[in-house]
Length: 190
Image (cartoon, rainbow, N blue to C red; front, side, top):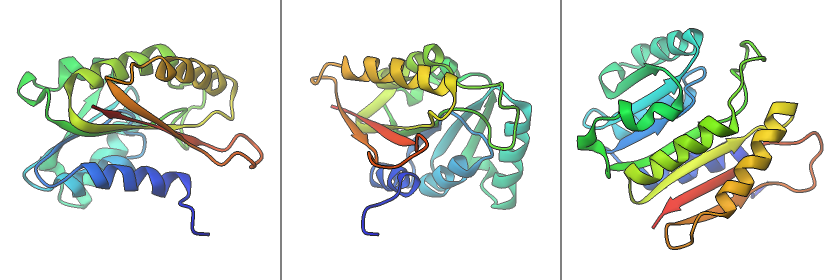
């Protein structure tokens, strides 16, 4: 297949906007895969700020970055992504080049703990304030569960209302697949 699948496309978007020395955000650290990917992009001279409300996510991510000798490039926060602006130092505001969200629940974790539209939208608003021009927010939306469907609907309504002078908004999805496959919303700050 020539079309990129959802997760590879998300990573392509991030790799196109994040370079060595940059500041990046993993808004939902989960099992640490995106934090590790971002840390490799920013290198020793950059920084990744990662957020999750679950101790298990923090432990898994901490282990992954340590095993890859990238601990110095990562700052892990055991708090919700709606705290992004208060956790990331003001000296980095305006310098964040990329951010990623994998919405839903922690794979292999407690499925009753899910992301919510209220905190996700608040995090997006804060990121739009502190992103560098042409910085990108990538949202991977998993909507195969009731909370995910509510979050999807609220997010779509919100991103469609973002002024085009503020950002470009892209939706990338396969429309003929069964079982509510994940899709991407990408927001590029102007």
